[in-house]
Length: 146
Ligand SMILES: CC(C)(COP(=O)(O)OP(=O)(O)OC[C@H]1O[C@@H](n2cnc3c(N)ncnc32)[C@H](O)[C@@H]1OP(=O)(O)O)[C@@H](O)C(=O)NCCC(=O)NCCS
Image 1: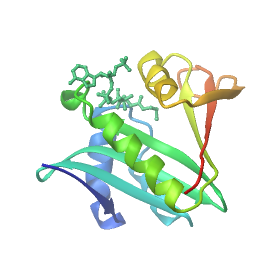
Image 2 (image 1 turned 30 degrees about the vertical axis):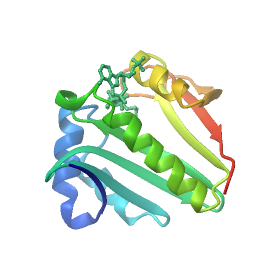
Image 3 (image 1 turned 180 degrees about the vertical axis):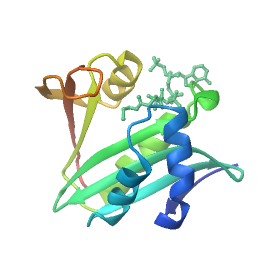
Image 4 (image 1 turned 180 degrees about the horizontal axis):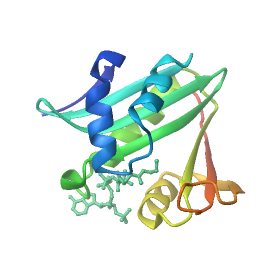
């Protein structure tokens, strides 16, 4: 059974653990800072009781940035990422968010392809943005609110 729940800082270990096993984007301290930011909501995608995906959504006025999005390796290519992304898009539409933004490394072909399928378009590049020296592609999707 698939479900989505909001995650609070007390479950920071779940986030850190999944991140360590996927893209290793943030330290525990950085995760803690995310939870404290105004407008940030952290979501977990669960299969029965196991958290297999995490996303971090940062809402500022009528825009939202996806600061984090990852699925546990063992559960990829089964449609879970798409299910989770559709949920975020619908949630944003219902909250009258006009634009969804994210950053992805230009070397992350799988993720870029995934976002392109959701009609995110590249609107800018940040050179040498990641630890490994790769560039960040800034992507956005305009939302038609309901
Ligand atoms: C990008 C990411 C979130 C995609 O998650 P996912 O759960 O694999 O996504 P889906 O299963 O919905 O779709 C992925 C592919 O599997 C395919 N797929 C979906 N269900 C499938 C099924 N039952 N059988 C075979 N293939 C399937 C999709 O068509 C899609 O194909 P594509 O390669 O043409 O895009 C995942 O690869 C990930 O976590 N990557 C690391 C984190 C990351 O890079 N995040 C972005 C930067 S923050």
